[in-house]
Image 1: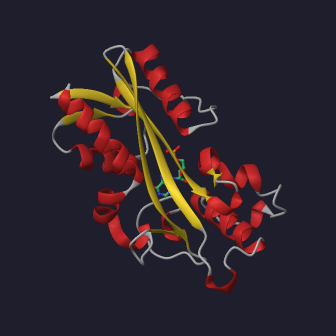
Image 2 (image 1 turned 30 degrees about the vertical axis):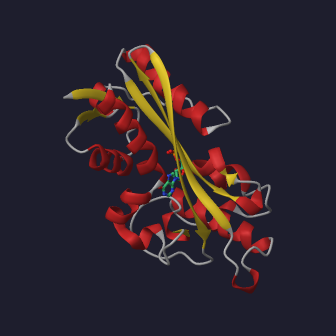
Length: 211
Ligand code: IMP
């Protein structure tokens, strides 16, 4: 079986990736290879950040490796949070005139609240409207000395109130196209069959199977 490092320690993502790649590959995490570095993600695109992480592992640990970078893009706010999805509240709350201390306890909650308040403040939910959004993932793979990219998108919209307990990040406010439940309500099985990450990783798996 082919062994690859997935340059992440995010338990949710590792679980998703391992369930998608099934038994075809042994996927090691950063922890599995003894890497506890805070790998920089300073690019301004998903692809750029993914490649930065994969290169770091290749250069420092020598393993063939893939890394992903994902985020939510909401059309009516210039595709924010985008590459700032993980630190949206920390970066933008003040700029939006929002008191960051009132957003909630967890980082996920603060980011979602920041997004909902921003969308409310510009009237994006007025008249029951649901702003158009998508999740995007770019995967960068370094394999046999070459760089490859795989992109996945899931289109949908943002709802004004958080719903559901599953998933992570912005899942409670994102409803994928063709469904009336949020990712957090749909559960892992459905999410893993249609998600941005699933779509990018499916291409990665197709590529690796042909190698
Ligand atoms: P990452 O850089 O791929 O870790 O993703 C950055 C941020 O985007 C995460 O911290 C989440 O806030 C958000 N995100 C990425 N993928 C998902 C998802 O599948 N559901 C909800 N939020 C996500």
